[in-house]
Figure 1: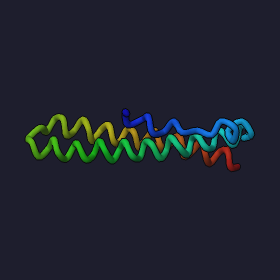
Figure 2: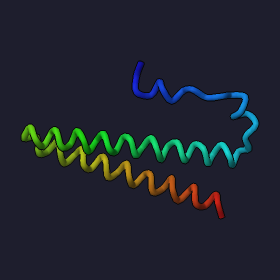
Figure 3: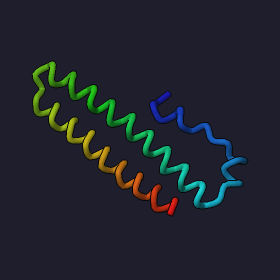
Figure 4: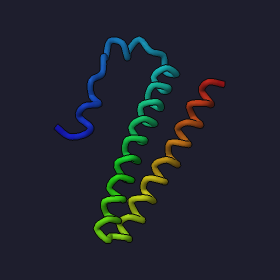
Length: 84
């Protein structure tokens, strides 16, 4: 089972009763949570790389975490726009 397999437990009956806006909000919320988890993992491995004197790998993984957080800012903005 891969990391992403555990996210495929969807109740299709419930999902089909949601409006488009509700589905979009749920997706955005899911993506935000999922990206936070990824950013934490990138930072964890960045620290491990730094401890192994892999400074360039550390920097790249830290950059990936920051980019992921930047993507979340877009998702959070989209979610706020839906609330207005």
